[in-house]
Image (cartoon, rainbow, N blue to C red; front, side, top):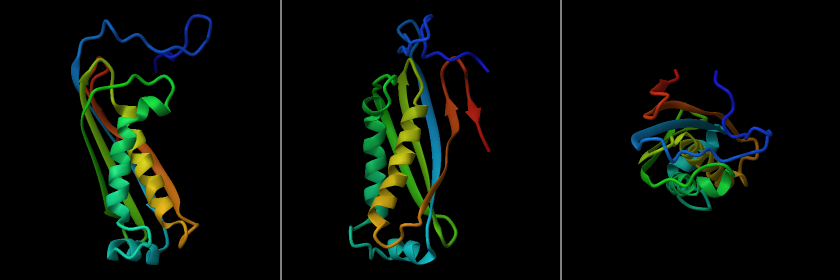
Length: 157
């Protein structure tokens, strides 16, 4: 494991200077899962949530979250994102699985954008369904793959 990069010599938070790094194609995929009561998932899939199309709204929220990551995470670089996909699918009888993939051509990776997309999508599912199921749980937020850059590719099972 390498040292932390977001601190200067005095130990203060600092934005990493990526100006000398070459631009490369970069991609990252993150996943999360929202566990709920089986009847909540049935309501979502039947399109019966009072707030509307839960999965469609969560997909858009995830995309918007990826695009706003630098506004939310203090030391993230604003990036020219070229693509964002957010997929929400039923996972068993009591959960929604979320997978977000972000792409760019740039000097730094898009792991934070993928994590933000997955987490904002998960939080949107919670928000839209909390009136009927306050016991929902968001779990498993993690980067499962990244490509590009000096550190190369990473895949997690």
